[in-house]
Image: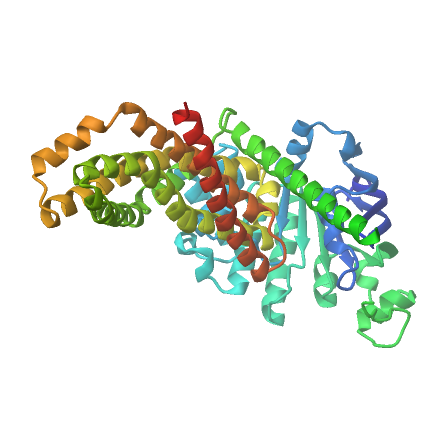
Length: 257
Length: 261
């Protein structure tokens, strides 16, 4: 385990119109560790990931990857960061117009690191890693079940052997068994690659399975960080209420005015 | 006085909004077109869209042109016979089709078919995070989604209009000779006597401009769609309406540029 910081966020702020989504997020993610961010719907989890990936520009704050300020990077340097990043989207975000094998090797093909013939073989190999037969590669994403789509999305996220992988609600929409299977695959793949994982979820079982460290975001701020295996008994009233799914506690359901 | 100021404010807001949209579209077009001359152009995507636009639009464009040519000959005969000017029908058909009806009707048909499909496909990609996924996969969405569509539509439309021109003229010829009793050789001779290179060239230039516009509005509306299915539906409608209106407006501008004296 390394003590080096892979990702460092300081004072990250983002608002959409009048709505403050991130209100000064401070977070450290150590290299080679799996960090899980917990939080309710609309707490700013997805926006945090999108800010780190450069999909959304934050209003204020610092984002460092490998000790370098992302905002001060050139276009090429940012592209280089994305080259060694993988992302599993909540709904898979597979490209409907391409067969599964092309989805899996999309980045390798786009960067011309591989021929189309070699990409087919590589896709079969990566699909096998996520428990899918090579023949799935010839199917269209629309022909797959939700669980299979998640596996293909995971295969796409790891195919280029990234050293940082982001997981956006990896088990949302899956039954508990399939959720556990996906979590197991995530843990295996991340360990095999030696990558740093950054996941967001509101599934407590999933958070415990895939996380080394955990943090809770509430109203755009990190309110707790600690080991993932302590979830449910952290001594922090907000985290414990969230982990146990209790109605009563410091977190109140907000009604939209 | 307050009402007057409110009205002025309303007009001002609408004007500012229109200018902002125009600027957005222009920047979007530049960003997309810039990838045509940068390395790594996705030729595979270009080929797919070229076939989709140029080949699969052929039936609808061909039928539209054929029937338009037929109706034009019939209507011209009805009108011109009042002035004993029936002999001008061949000229009217060929000039109308090559200069105006071929490119405009093909443009409107392709806008309905392709512009809507582009907006729906890219809009769906937007609302299902596929565009963000492209970015995380080290691929510029403008290069992968917009540039090949712009080039494919700009190149495919003139080819479609050549087919539309031929079938439109053929439709007029068919009605002229079979129903109205013209001698085929004389009808064709009159057609080619009056036809000049500039008539065809102006139509092809219009077609290329209309193709670019259809792809631009389809991709822009899709790229900026928001929300779920409703947002995609609205983007599709906006793409077809905007490209249809722009086709008609630019038709006038190009006609003025080619033929005004």
